[in-house]
Length: 114
Length: 115
Image 1 (tube, rainbow over the protein chains, first blue to last red):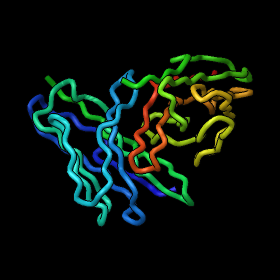
Image 2 (image 1 turned 45 degrees about the horizontal axis):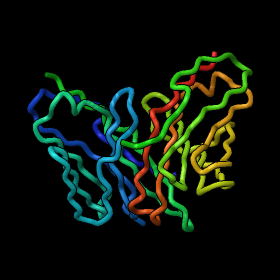
Image 3 (image 1 turned 60 degrees about the horizontal axis):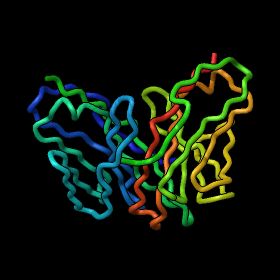
Image 4 (image 1 turned 120 degrees about the vertical axis):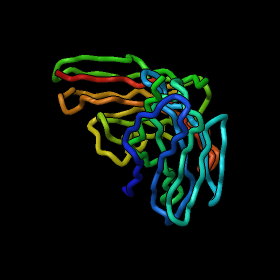
């Protein structure tokens, strides 16, 4: 199993601050990277699917970029709100002989203080 | 909103008991997955299925077993629970699209505590 790492593990920001965090993954044999948001007591919810080097995706105040050559993706939140508080997971899609498996990072736990 | 359900949400049980964690989805997805997550750790794939009568073990060794008799149902069974099985178990499903675009939809999870 190859590692997917996320940093920081957790952070606290003030309401209105912008923030970003990193997902690092193996740069060889890249296939896809998924971002999920997981609020406490709820199900993880898909945010973005990133497939091409240089991809930039946006959903409201949240955006993500992808660099497959160096093996990282950034997730940005502009003007953080308390409802953004959640754990943000990235999952690297590993392919082996035609089968696909997600390798998850440990997540970044974001707390937005009002 | 995804239609994938897990029961029970929380379970406290004694060592040696047999337990079944239920997972159902109403989206008609062929692929289903079970993940295990210990506090502060990654989600680890323990079982997956590509469709009815298909089950495969994931990367993390698990003493649990699964079955897939119906498309919508993917229960996970522990024949004899032990304290080492204490963890959170998440079920997910996805529609087959050849890999890249296969977004997984997750259930709310079952938190299991074995005493």
